[in-house]
Length: 402
Ligand SMILES: Cc1ncc(COP(=O)(O)O)c(C=O)c1O
Image (cartoon, rainbow, N blue to C red; front, side, top):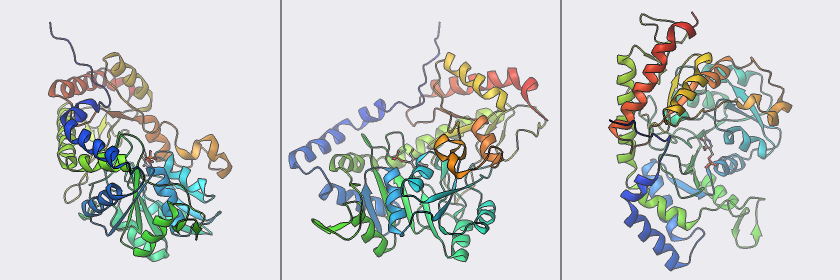
């Protein structure tokens, strides 16, 4: 009798096993050097990331969250100044803004890509009094509409900071690598990212030598020369151990991206065959088959989606039950993100009421992430697709709203 495979949302052990020797050698090299903070490994990694991301400068730092703080400090962000950003994102996007006293101004998403909507950003900018930056997030590994944001930023004379934490190696609709259109891009190497460290790590990138210089100082308490401080910065340095590990992993990143893209194509095909449309068709449009599920729309080439997450959408009443069913079937899932930032208790002081961002609020109730990591086996992929299709087929008629 065949048993169904267990499918975790993410399992990094096979990846480590496949590159164990390279990683262990890199770690041993750092330990032998006894240089643990910044130093030659970090400098080499910064050079390699700058090249990979097609930018001139890369500044390694402690995390993707601190990378955003460094970027905002480098552009001279002051308490009370406004940053237009999405609410449907990981907490750090808005948290980093608020951490330095700046004011997040929430903008709704485009429900097709889940990325911040440029038209609504332009609209929100009209009521800003102290607008300092626009911060699109390349959510789940697919680029935001950078052409539109670049045009808007230029028109308003406002800096664009790209929160590219989830999107290393992704390209926008025009084929430009993410991180190359904004003044600064910020990156995360949190272990679950396509390029993930063995702990926390992050990076800022820019083409501007002045911003690069500021961020280099800001990550060491605002100091260029030891004990002489030009700014009040932070302890935001990247560890040499993380850099050495990430240098090894960077060499394999394209293969891992390809694995995720292959897995996404498998799911897309399986769900389309079952009658699902992609996220361009709202769930409220029943369509011919009435199959109440949407798989993620992929912007066509030269754009490039690197699938940090694979997100499907089902009606509100079905999402949590589908998750429970998949858990029963030993399939790991996650909800990104169940409570949008504008509805978080810590942001109540901003006064954004429920109902203000309808696409964000609907997405937070309707989306669910499926396992997508590159080491998934065909059996595992098949099991996930079958169980999703089985559940949605059995529950479509009753749950869809027309
Ligand atoms: C969109 C986004 N921004 C910022 C961050 C923060 O990165 P880190 O966890 O490295 O601080 C993350 C991490 O998950 C993220 O997904």
